[in-house]
Length: 166
Ligand code: SME
Image (cartoon, rainbow, N blue to C red; front, side, top):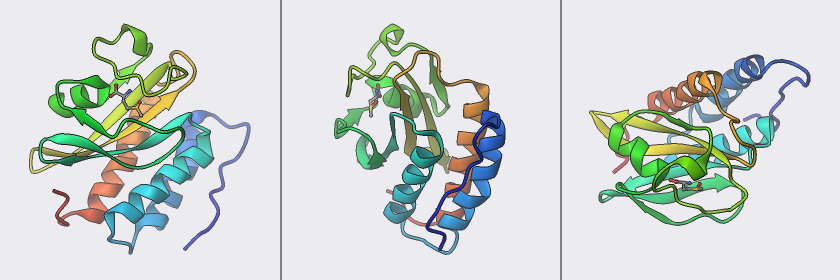
């Protein structure tokens, strides 16, 4: 298993994601343990992009429970009617929030977080977990992040299913 993530400096965000994706694929291929893969994906994204917070919430009995992450401490449980994570899980789609303070019901784990993207992993029409990435800058995330973070979640889905994620 690789121990280093390499992403070239001074290239576009899309190019960085394109360099990173095969490295993430090789990190998680052959490892079926969900927690191990979520931990390494969080670390790889943090190393490549220095995101403020990157991690996962796992669906457990109808609420989202904190999983592996990199960054400051975070709230442990998110009901589906709350937060960006709850909304993305409810709607079963990626949400890009340019200013978290304008998002009704946003959950503030850190006042330094200013913008956010949440990508759900949906299998058999059920949300199994969400990938949550926070930035300390307003308007950090766009359709490029959405496209590639959805690819990261698709890789995870391919590797882990039909494992039981519930
Ligand atoms: N802001 C999220 C909560 C999780 S933290 O950002 C790590 C939300 O509103 O769902």
